[in-house]
Length: 287
Image 1 (cartoon, one colour):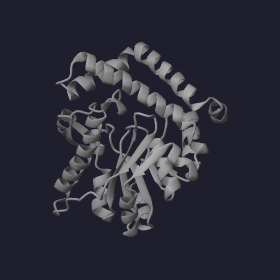
Image 2 (cartoon, rainbow, N blue to C red; image 1 turned 45 degrees about the vertical axis):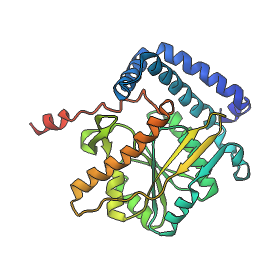
Image 3 (tube, rainbow, N blue to C red; image 1 turned 135 degrees about the horizontal axis):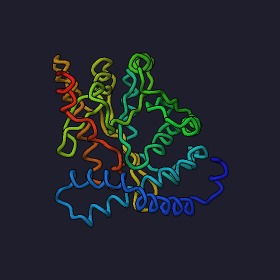
Image 4 (cartoon, helix red, strand yellow; image 1 turned 60 degrees about the horizontal axis):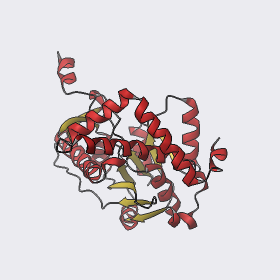
């Protein structure tokens, strides 16, 4: 299937994906309502036409992610510059030189799949932390494409110990930390002015292993190409109060993600129920 779709020229494939995104936008009332609510709560200063414009572009953005995913197995290091530029590669190399392993984090923003492929081809393969797909078909094909450039997919379930071992061996772990988690798997931090339950795994790993933590975001440029930006090593708060330090660092990571989304809101996946878990669930559980 992947090989057949690759025969469709990239430009035609993107246009077809955009048409399908438009159809989904108009037909999927439930998800459009979720995304509209998320956007209106996050940008109360924007008018309804502005919100609708961001939302429609968000659908198109995700459609392009899917469309370009089929090009990944054929990417070549020497031709990457035709598709994507990378800034901050020296930050990543400095982190690797510490020989403690590296923790990269990002979001479902822009085209993280292309960014992961480019980074692996330019440097070395790494481990991508993900949630196993409900569909065996998607699981097989998506993880297969990721493996085509050397990266390993590791399920989030009970992954803490394996990740610690991998970091001790100098591996890089890449994770997307912008999605909702259950109240018992995360902590509530501010995200666009609302409390969002966020995974604490990254903060716990950083405090336990002392591995350097770097943000990495791949955004689409106006000409259709991509830019992978790898930030400088994040300063980790380590006061000795583990509970507070985990919360503070998780908030810091989340703030960096919010800053990126505020700059380019159309490149984030707004239809995800990011604020689904509520603080009151902890209180009800306590009773």
